[in-house]
Image (cartoon, rainbow, N blue to C red; front, side, top):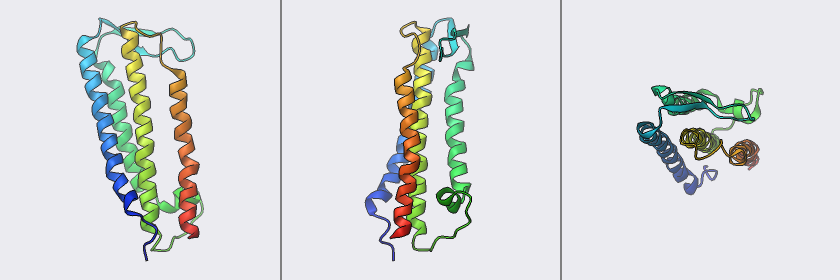
Length: 171
């Protein structure tokens, strides 16, 4: 009995994985393209709360952001595969799920992981793009409304996917 998994949801996982790969590619292409053309002084960090921008000589340290993004994606995916399903749905409770429900819950867990990574990648790319704009003195910093909008959407994913998992468990 497997009425829990709809074929359209299974097809979403490869698209979400492809979206993550595309965003990683965009981050690396943007970094390489911009680094070649950057001025001799580049910002290392953003002026988040009115603090002065930290400038440094142009160096490969600029690639810290795409490197961190790549590592973050890899570690996040590894932790998502390692973390037991029961811990994600019920927190600290040790509760076993019936076998017919497990594939649907795994699909939701994988979908959440990949979608959350897309939002994290967008945050990394936003920070990196803001640094590039600062280097060229096009912008004064990064868009706080866009940044916090992404954070809020990311936070809202948690109860949404928990609710979907509970709906599967009740059916």
